[in-house]
Image (cartoon, rainbow, N blue to C red; front, side, top):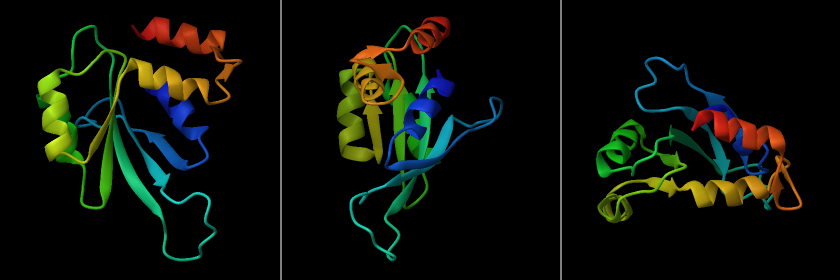
Length: 138
């Protein structure tokens, strides 16, 4: 799933330098990269890119606050966190996240909508390789 999200994020115009972290000892961070907050403006300064750290959880049950707070604890000043799951977040985790953490939550529906906007899909249909990768990671 991490490789698929790396491909997806790398294909987006405002995201760059997407890297997978080593699979062991990642300390709750699966991907890193930069997001350009002002893609339409052609500025020489200031730099409008912000670093992100992302966690990918592919599990059948819900994602709780503990998992989100683990990612948030890895996010440094001036960075944001991105949390991806094909599952869903508990209501308590969502409420806690909104008021406490610099982490954006993406559920399965969000991931599919993002994939549909990339070259990994055609005519709002995910390419077979993408579907195979999703199925093999579940």
